[in-house]
Amino acid sequence: QVQLVESGGGLVQAGGSLRLSCAASGRTYSGGALGWFRQAPGKEREFVAAITWSSSWILYADSVKGRFTISRDNPKNTIDLQMNGLKPEDTAVYYCALRRGFSAQLKGVRDVEYWGQGTQVTVSS
View (cartoon, rainbow, N blue to C red):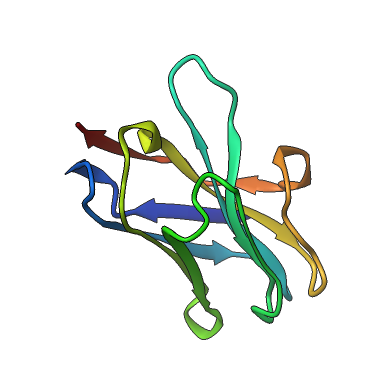
């Protein structure tokens, strides 16, 4: 089994910053793409950012490009999402996601094998 545990969510004013972290444990992966998705109330879960095992491929949603940065530390089995210039429309529950495989990529909900439990991010105007 795989466990993904997010941390770092909270309440911040518009224009502020937050850093989310996700720690993977268990029979995780021998290589895998990790990423972030988010779901706002009444909306579908959407892709935010993803990074491959080697960090050679990184993808961002257009809505966060230039404001968010994803990174990973393989020896620690963690990924981070640095979120700057936060906007009220970034308010959502943010989920860590995993697709196993050295060459795996994450581009959408259907690519995800494992989900974290989610962490709330609230941006006030």
